[in-house]
Length: 361
Image (cartoon, rainbow, N blue to C red):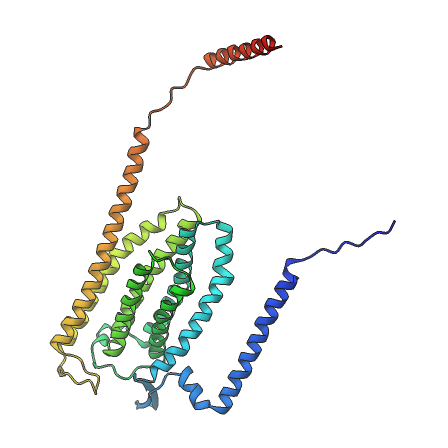
């Protein structure tokens, strides 16, 4: 008898896996070669895509520091980082979120919301750490008056400008992701609302030279959003876990209050007391009564809209909860028979069944 040796097949080294990864490796090698050629042939054009533009040297007491201001070339840099963000989005989706969602066995609706919250958790967590580092190193937290003093803040440090460019790139990349992720038609208006809301506020702070105030407001907003999407992920993993939602509800209202107070303090009082209150777009000065009122109205309207949606969702949640509790109370309890009666009934039924079988025989 000939014995045949059994070979164990490993899914990790299957043909499909090897071909797929070979294709990825080949694509990366080709991409690296193209990038190398691009750097050698057109180095200036490559830096236009990768690095922020419009750098100037600002003299200081010890030496000179490089600062930046904005211009039309920023659109090219934003476009480059939009593609980078789309690639990172796909990596997080394929290697993290898809593997977790397969284990949870979610429905289509929950699967879509799980992917949305998973992507935003990664983004908000990264942005909170990055924004907090920028705010601390630039001294905006220790000196709140720096939010409006020396306005207009035309000359930005490298990390501040790069942070704003990456933020704009992320929220602009979210628009084509609605198609790539095959978002349902019912969810598209809701997602378009908060995408446009973020774009208007971030671009407004960047173009109106309110970058310092915008950093603090983004830090507060992103911290709240990170807690909310973390609560959604824990809820999808275990529907009985709703403690984080209670924490988020408390933090949400406090954050709205802080944002409104800080906006009124910096724009309504700080900028209003500045001497230079002339409309001069060439110098980046937008410190006029009309501009201040427009910015304050925009911030207050956005916070009021968010608070209204929050209250509406909380009322709906409480209404559903009380309806479930009242439905449970209306269900009549089935009377339980004593153990003796159950035994007697089972014995009678058994005797009847035996009698039917004998009669049939």
